[in-house]
Image 1 (cartoon, helix red, strand yellow):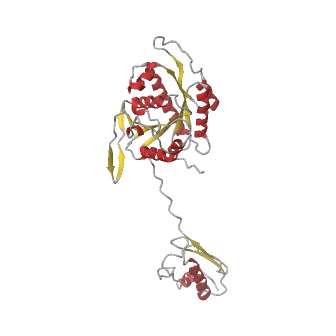
Image 2 (cartoon, one colour; image 1 turned 90 degrees about the vertical axis):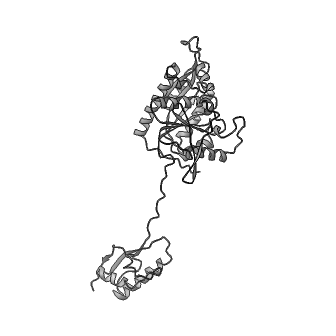
Image 3 (tube, rainbow, N blue to C red; image 1 turned 135 degrees about the vertical axis):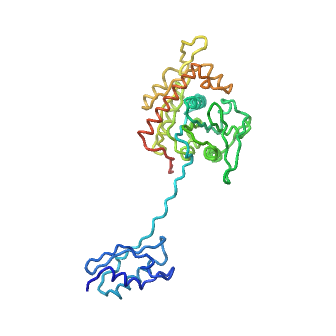
Length: 368
């Protein structure tokens, strides 16, 4: 007896799927993969869901139908495969779809001028014509509102399609958000890590940042919950480490770089900024006094094989500008404005290099 595919299909018409009472051929459950090798017959039956309760009984009924209507000598037992559709892959939702690059500015220890660098870098990028956002992610010590002179600002919260969204404050061409806008500046924030992390997530994801070329995140000093929340919530393009030349700051900066470049996080470090590289008094602008040591940041950058993006001196105008709410970078005619403009240009160049030569930015999935 010659066995051919139509004989198999004619036999399977007698098999009904209990779920709907229809035969498995007209229901499209029999796949177009019937294979005949002598008396051996094999094919597959597709079920709409995994772990279908009728799968085994349908396979047994199909085996019996072929033995009955085609012939008992047909080798069919164990040759009927079960196919279930692959579960749909979860859609990847971009948290900040209109933000091109996210820059994390961090330091190993406090007091090295990280917020000063973040503020002046953001303004310098805006002066270069880029669309810039600045997030003060230092939940327990927000200083960006004071540096921008917007301590009394209260961002508007609007409802959009059933969810509340925060409208960032804008100054010097930079969109700004900080927890400092929502708490009493004289009160200490005594929050546990989970509360701080949730607050940061809200500032990142529940705000109308709009189209941004660069989104600068001023992270708190050290390595902790806030840093992990940042890399797990959004894909960080690259990080910038800020340090002073002294050994204590350099040791902590080294740990911070290790955190970002470690296997679990693996965020590219764009480079290092040596802040307070030397002291230059206003009356003696040509003089350099290395109060915190000389060239420590430069040596660390060489040791870690990362670019030295800039050496920013300790000058009175930078401190005065930050305290007065008018960062020096906003004064385009000042010497220090040129220094921060050069830093911004180097950051743009490093990000272009990173995007052209490294894997696409993605959120970090940290498995404990």
